Structures are given as C-alpha cells and as structure tokens.
Length: 178
Image (tube, rainbow, N blue to C red):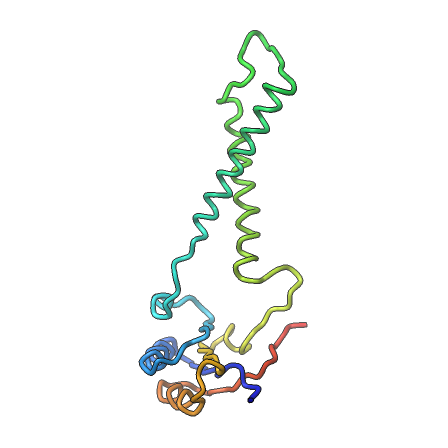
C-alpha cells in the first residue's frame, strides 16, 4: 500500500484548470478538491457542489434571538417586575422593538460565526492544512484522491495533457504554518 494520499495538478491559468477538471470528469475520475488564489465563476457547478444552506441557519439564529428577546422582555416587564407608570400598559411592544432587533442581530452574528467554524473545520487554534503553499499565491491546484482512483499514471497524463505545470504526489502529511 502506498503512502500517496493525493495527486496534485498545479496550473498557472484558470482556463487550463477548468479544462483539467473537464478531462478528469470525462474519464470518471473523482476530484477531491480544487484550490485557487481567487474566486472562479462557475467552478461550483462544474464540481457539483450543492448550494449552501447557511442562509437558513442565519434565519433560524435570527428568529431565536427575536424569541429570546421577546421572552426576556415579557418576563421582566410583565411577570417579574411590573411597574405601573401613569396607567400605561406593562408591555408596550413599540418600546421594545429596538431591543428585539439588537438581540436578533447579536444571535445571528454569533450563530453565523459558530456555523462557519463548524462547517469549515477552522476552529480557533487549529493549524491550517494546506495542500500546496502556492495555491494561495499564483497557482490553481486540482487535488485528486489517490485512494479512490488507482490509475495514478492515467491521472498524471490527463493533468499534463490539460496543461498542468507540474504534478505532485502528496503523502499523508500536511504542511502547517507552526
């Protein structure tokens, strides 16, 4: 059993990288991930990445904040410490809208930060895992899982035919910034 975990094709141009993705997909080779130094329009559709559901999470966190604010205000103003000020009602909703809005934003912001960390596995204090350091600077890298695809020479040839500047075999270790 070899120690090769990923086959990395490094490209200098995004169009060549897109061509490399097409060639790999035509030969039914699964792509683990693609690393680019900038966003590329249409790459999510080409890789088959599903639409993010992060907006649903934001809505749920916002509703939770609104409900918590409403419950806290109602408990404090009506149940626990009812104050009669000039015969006005204890729970006048327009007075508490700014507080409910602020707690909605607060819950949504903190919830989205936690959701982002959970979905990307980027918890504070964790060393980043980088396949190729040049992928954050000037290279476009296609990572192919070597375990799922046994024909390493075929993948090597396809990547070079698509215009890869170099093809590397990444072992079981990760480069870290420690």
